Length: 362
Image (cartoon, rainbow, N blue to C red):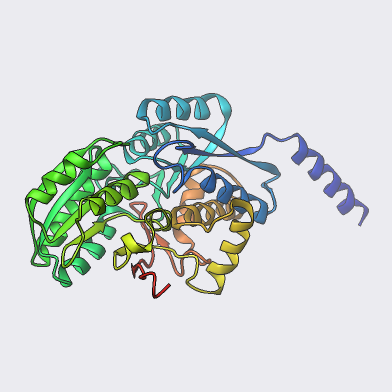
């Protein structure tokens, strides 16, 4: 008994002196994606750490966040600093697919782990996959197939795309166009728009001139809500014509309002009001953030907890061992049931097709 007590005291002392295990999040904290990720995602990671107990393998767990400003060079610079100097063990999310793809390559070269919840490009688990990266919440391929097929099935045959001009948007348009064509629709035009475009009027007029059945927005974050709002102001989306947001978070529905968003179909891997488990987590999150979590924020909590459990199980933060444990262990929590991380890093789990209620239904 005395030996056990002394051993416990020594272990606690060692834990206090040990370097912390550091988890990083490269977020857009003030720009286009700050509402759908940003501080909310950092809060979700902090909640996971607190729920886990704040310590693993005798080391305190520390969450570090940085504003990468939606710039690839900024994200790359911070990641190198984190890995080489600051001792970050894993990055649990990165805003912007172009930045995420660049940082995931750096992480692989330095034998660090990356999990992606907010960035959507399917390239993470296809041509740019590596053994150190997990794509956890959604990808453009899954959203394209689900929403694209559903909208064509409701009569949306002729599509025009308004597409954000970087990797995420390019992939999204290409994959949705393939899904639309396979379902019996056709693409009659597209236009590329810059990230954080303040005015969509010229792009919307190009779409309007083609008289499409569907104007599809291959955008994300505030860009999506701003573009759809402006399209509605031009009278688009009336009658049989549809406005399709290919990546729509709860945040955008709130920003648009039900009168504009009513009837819109969207695909998501999480909704706060799905069941008792999602409601319980979301209530705790709302107490901290003042609003409900979206799928990416819930995914950050889930992936962070899954990572910490794997570290504890293998007794080490060695990337290969932790990754192997994460892949062999099913994800069973409020976010996913029987989720499975494949060899290519894709976390396979259920997604849901939702429709936004009308004001009268809500």
